Length: 169
Image (cartoon, rainbow, N blue to C red):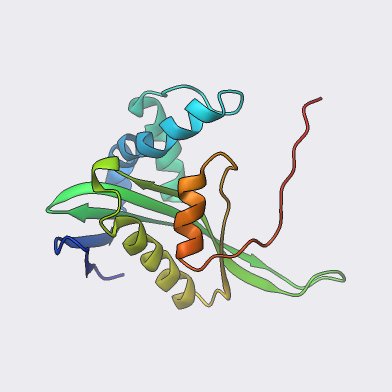
């Protein structure tokens, strides 16, 4: 995969590159941007503030997956976000058509770089990778509390596909 640059509204180039196994520590650190929001809003689901060193093995495992794609965004040479996606290839069965799609699992952007095109550049890289691998759809999910992410994805052309409901027992 080649590096590509996209211009942010601020005219600062955003460079997107595929992550390598050496990036596990960087991804663990960048994850804090999105994890903090989730832990604050759903402490029943997310651990509060995991240390980046505790996340390194998690990202090493993601980076080792054959079906995973991880991209890092840099602005002015500084890492400012990442996207983690997984390719899903489901064969046809008696109930469902064959499906090949890409699922965006994580999208994290440094709040200092918000609204500069970083999220869009990462999303574009995921879309391009999905198309390159023959995927017909890009899927993601958003927690109900995360109205900012919902607005971002809606502006990016996503539409609701299904609703996941929960009930405490």
